[in-house]
Image 1 (cartoon, helix red, strand yellow):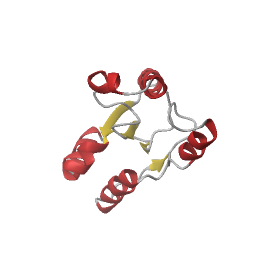
Image 2 (cartoon, one colour):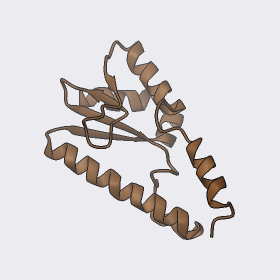
Image 3 (cartoon, rainbow, N blue to C red):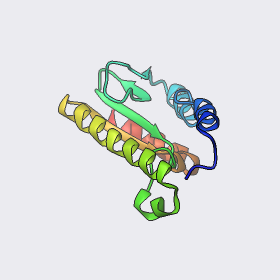
Length: 131
């Protein structure tokens, strides 16, 4: 069970950024330094990808390890039911959106938060390789 009231949880969740997170800013800055131009959060694409290269049809998602469940099966048992359900639904939604994009002819690049923190240049090289 959650240790916060519904009102407290709602307030906390409203403070979590969905766009222009720190990891997004760092990756976008590096891509921009390399002369690459892109769009952000394209609303008419499934999942509103964080970075979109329209001509190349490449959609990049920069996902937080907790919120999107990196290696979720290994640690989901340690979470309260509320979080297991929430993260599980996020993972299913991500997979549906990735599949929709692929059916539309897009290449999907998923980058995890820890990868950005560990090897930003490697992440940028991976994105560039898709272009």
